[in-house]
Length: 178
Image 1: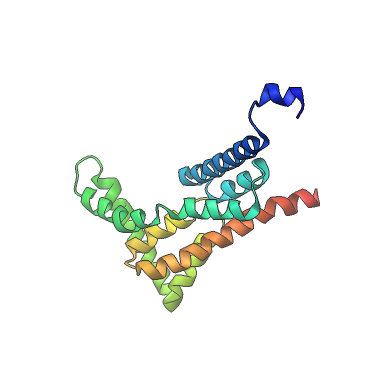
Image 2 (image 1 turned 60 degrees about the vertical axis):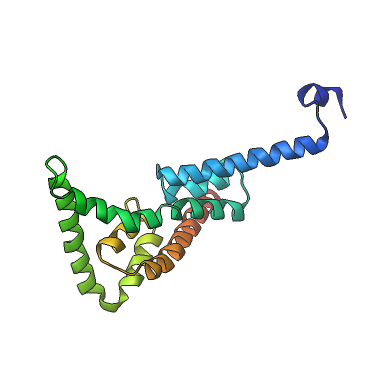
């Protein structure tokens, strides 16, 4: 071992390896929290994990998918209840009523157009990475439309995977083209 390395890191080589593992796990945690905040949603978290932090591809996808799916049960079971609760409140009632009415109206139009392919529409809504679409919005829509939770999650999860694949490969393709 060189003297310079002893000055920087007085521990053993195993300690250095452990340190870098902890740093990588911290970056993975940051990627997950980045996904959870939905600052850039699925459009940003996978590329950030892959290209900024140089995390391994499998780890990046797993962390980002888990981070995106964690709030899904809360949104499905409680968001609609909060909207229903708040629709007759003085300050927030108008907005909450608007959200519920627009959700029902849009849902009925969607049901009329898709028929028995409503879950396919949910998959595509979640899987195509456009701002405003995604697992959280799709889950809220499924909740407002009284869709089955297990069936909804069974199409939302692959939609998140599809969106992750698209957002993870698109920057690499664009980089190769330019």
